[in-house]
Image (tube, rainbow, N blue to C red; front, side, top):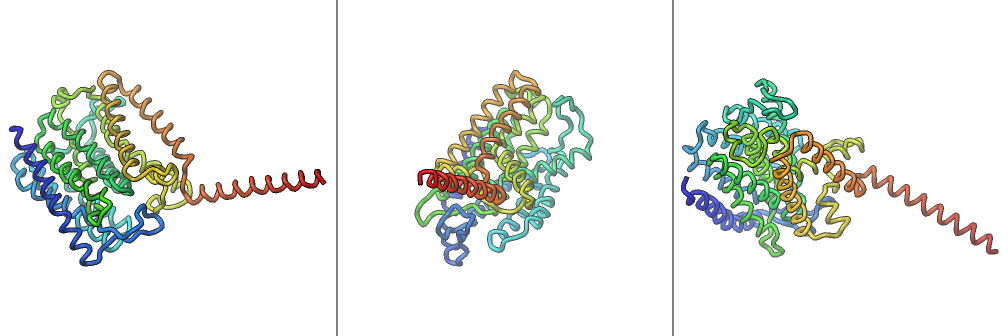
Length: 381
């Protein structure tokens, strides 16, 4: 493949998104479709949303030119899934949908992908002693994995720049992987979406009237594409993995490390909500990024860069370990990391149940202090 194609798709996506976003902002403001801040919002003023509209049309445009680049007609299978999530995300940004409605749409979108044989995972290549995978197990695991990734990415879109920066990091890694394995269709998809996100980031971090959010329209689409890239990464043929700098049996753990930020944050908030006897889909300000800006008073930009930097460093560490270490040691490092992060962020639990516990505890301390003062006062008399 000529080096001109990656540059062309990346730059083309960047330029198209850059000049489309102002048009979307103008239309949203004209139609008064702004995102109004509420008690859970991290922004304080009405802000245009629907930035993901640009992602959708740029990806569809790219897929038209890439339709002959794929061996199993993957481009045709991506279009209906992208369209379903675009429509659902758009409606959710305009008229809030229930989580279950979005879940049904995600299942439909994912069905198109896992029905294409290019994404079939035949083996885990010895990961935890597992080799061949029955087709029925593949459908169940692949569907669950894709839906988890879509929702995990959707949930981290809570502060300025975070979803974009994390998405950029993940897509850079996948672009590198697919370049090394000569999967050029997925390389160009990664670069196209990355061009969209880098261009969008300028507007998302803006403090002027040009500010815009990607909304569910964007986060569902980006999460969907990342889930597709992850599934393809796991479904590569054994000879493709020979060109990658890590052991073949460590592939599933490398995939988890690439997605560590959205997966850890989702697992954490779901666990806290269930422990508080609330629906895992209920809203709160208990995400990792909320803790950084609420508890540590870090700006949105710094919090996003810290989290994105952690994602990049963690993947780099796992690639180094995965080049020489076997499953046991990588699993050990992963479990220890999750436990340490879980403990650190549990201390800053913003769930209502934990807040009530803290309030009750503070009141008891205040009562004890008051009683102590009264006793000391009487003794002095």
